[in-house]
Image (cartoon, rainbow, N blue to C red; front, side, top):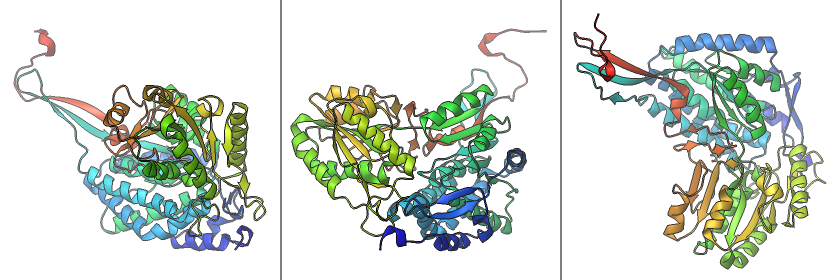
Length: 512
Ligand code: UN1
């Protein structure tokens, strides 16, 4: 079956119906949605106006005022139900992710699994929003720290994880007692509409069993940059969690800061791996293949730079080039294909531009050419590119959101470590080695400067239990596991005097 003969409109409508979305929501709107699998227009959805966006923010604020009064473990019950609804909808939502973004089947399903996982995590967390008890210097006093709900949490998400990133933020924000308001990528409104409908199902069940979830607890804003800007500037949105390019973060961060709002920024990555001279090369080959070629290079954690020790270069790199030449590319819904399409033409053009720049800087390019264009002119499939570079320069220090792996030979571990850190981005990194000194040095104070540093696995595909995010131009935010929840709450220090005198701190006397 060629790509052109595939038809997704009817299937999209029936998937949306399975989530409870009215067929009318898919036609007649101003935002046209295409499947990157074959370029077919699959829906035209309505966009929200600026006025309605402001009204929605006010309504979300009202919802927050009520929701914060619900005890946290009861808030957790809503997220437990959301997890159940997501389990029930996993096959359909995973399929819709594949249709709208072009992910292979297991990755579409994996994205929904990531949503389920964070719901489970957040349910546990709803009983663990712990504060400290702190030793006080004053007699008959108690000092403690309490965590309170913060307010409306604005979520801005990118096309490549169109629903998982919402769930990392929303599941935590909601158990923390906040309401949420979500502006997804213009490229992926359908999976957002589906997710909102699934959330509404959970709310319905929650309220039917006596829960008190207010209306507008979660709001979806379909629209363009102007809508995102209203969210970013609004004083009733104390926290903006934004995932996307560094350029987007550069626009969002200062605007939120200017009104003393908080932001969680999860921006570009330019993730590297070091292959040491003791590395298990079979494992390395698999780790590199998944993290560099998987998701067609469109993860923020995608492996983009590979530093290979000179003693293993001639063994590993030809094997990698062979893998790049033989990997199966095509309809991501067809079993056996590992590489689906790029999201759109712009993405393809930026990739070609980077490859030209690499050549101009002395790079030797393997692959990178467009394939299957004869089957569907508006679908952009590429053979992943492996580029042997003489040094780290030109496009290597930039993030190009496409499957390009730059490979550089090194002789000395410390030089490879320096190269790992010598880019503006700081999201993820890894080392393949069986040398315990190298492995430990890599994760030590003098090691990788990234938010994520792995040993003997690639830089992508993190579990939800750890804090996710990175340093430098990656923006510094942390989402998902560990204690990332603290960013969604406000901390309060409480000192309580249960005595009859009033001793002052630091021995200060003020007797009247
Ligand atoms: C992203 O690309 O924005 O670690 C998120 C990973 C996934 C999340 C990626 N769990 O690759």
